[in-house]
Image (cartoon, rainbow, N blue to C red; front, side):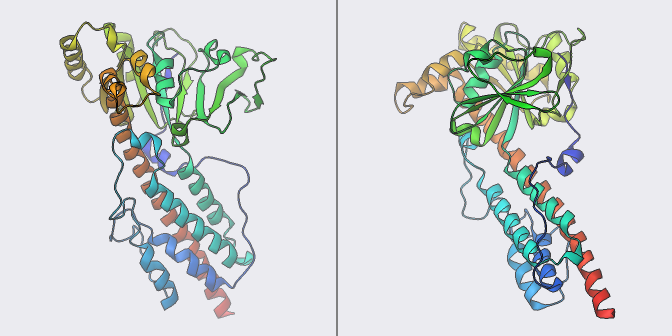
Length: 391
């Protein structure tokens, strides 16, 4: 099944996920207060102490007092220690959480201050959708040919030992792993209809299912979701496409067997995606344990670096079987050495660094969008105030 490309970077920065329950504006204080709360939104920035992307000259001291503190908002405030390695996979991205909090506060104040005459509902909804998009966990797709170790790697990334039997028997259907307080399984049909999968009911016909969604109580899934895609065959076979756009994929991992790594068919499949995916892709050579010794592993790693060039952000050799065997054990003892030897720690480090970069890019894009939304809101408020003063 060939892959369909991800959306262009420009589209990904401005596209906002559609969701139900959008907030509506509330009638409240005079229009001047609405302007007071819209102003600070334009001052949000991702550079400590830097100037906002769009400047605004407040007309009164109270607005300036609100804008000032927000101009120094940053994704990594001074004094905050950035997590390293695998911590990126498990922890909530604190800078993004602060941005969400600031956006939510500003939106609530704007809702209370705006009068119906200002018609700021689109701006308020845009801010709400931006919050929702920032709050969504990043989503990593696990791709590769059949029997390349994708599902085992997906389990490792999700922090689970295995999936329910109903899922294991349907590996030709894309499977989303996400956080849930209690285990649950849902099917999503192509028309968007979702149905909870019960133990006494079988799956609907395979061609009707767009995706299986599995909720699991794994802490890691609170910050990163995993999409286990069906095993790909020769991209020239004409099989149905896997739509990465529809699955809202932020990054991708390509699994290749260590004993026959990076075949021509794999290069062809990966080349069908935009070159920029190389900035968000990781090549993982699975079944590392099948290589005879460390010298063979070094030779393979050297060959892959030479052949793939800049097609991936990182390359890692992993033995998922060895990693899963010690995943739940205390790594301060012998299990720690086995975890390192399996390559799992290296994978966490590379993927963690990639996800940190993507979170910062996403937050920066959200702040740029917020600045534009606030600019339009301020123009509308000024026009309304001028109309009232001239009346």
